[in-house]
Image 1 (cartoon, helix red, strand yellow):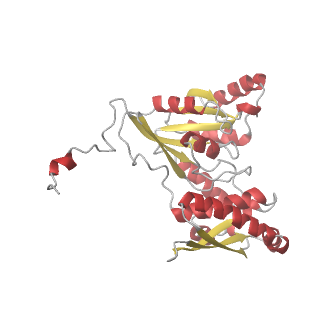
Image 2 (cartoon, rainbow, N blue to C red):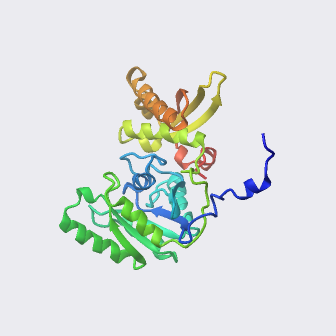
Image 3 (tube, rainbow, N blue to C red):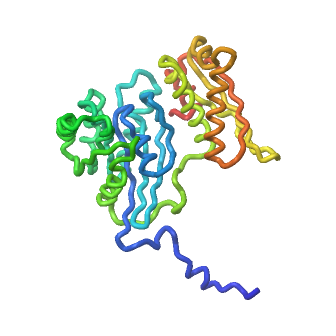
Amino acid sequence: MPPLDPNDFLSQPDPFTDVPPDHRSGFVAVVGRPNVGKSTLMNAMLGQKVAIVSPRPQTTRNRIAGILTREDCQIVFIDTPGIHKPKHKLGEFMVDEARKALPDADLALWVVDVSKAPRRDDERVAAVLRDQPLPVILAMNKIDITPPDRLLEHAEAYRALVPGVVEDIAVSALKRQGVDALVDVIREHLPPGPRYYPPDQVSDIQERFLAAELIREKALLYLQEEVPHAVAVDLQEFEARESGVIYIFARIFVERESQKGILIGKGGQMIKRIGAEARKEIEAALGRKVYLDLRVKVKPKWRRNPAELRRLGYA
């Protein structure tokens, strides 16, 4: 075997700095009111699932980075909770998370549900954006369910709320209509720069956090209206066993005994369904077999308790 030549290492391309001369990069804060499709749109732009999604408003509770790397750009999307009028400490944390994403961003991507006229929460988002010295791209989502006459009317109403909108584009995150064009528009408004993350990295979230989020996603999908927002997932154990199986033990918190009964279901059928569906997605994400052990516990008013919020990572 010939001796190693140090020059062989020096000649290797640097994945961070060896980029085309017109390469652009930056951080994009994805903001909007609850339930307009921010996470679905980010997942569509990335081409894979990074953030959990559900039909429920306020599904996203933490800031989550999704990283899109192309030959000509690297875009770091920061998915944020929906901006709304909070009713408890958890809501205050979520709105604060969205606000914190803006000062360090290069661009704001304002996602709206263009099938509907602006609501009070849209006006709250607009007020936050007007306070930031950031270019704003307006992503008018859900064009697949918007009549053409309403599209024009609602688009004008949204544009009027934020004079700083530099571009607007109609998309359907669900149908992937206009998504590639939106990415191209975002790239044009980012500064020249290197890559900040390895080209194959698509998120900054840890495996434990991802597992907890996927459990919560299934609870949001299958539970009745009164229960989902009272759900929190506390991952107690995440351990790789000698067999290669990852053992995960998680407690699902609710606020009332009645919610606990609904979550467990008749004969334990609901919690079994949530566990089975969550396990499939966790295994797909981790590429390994998973044994998932779920228990349900009542934590009265946890969403209003600063100590509980801190322990669960919402502070």
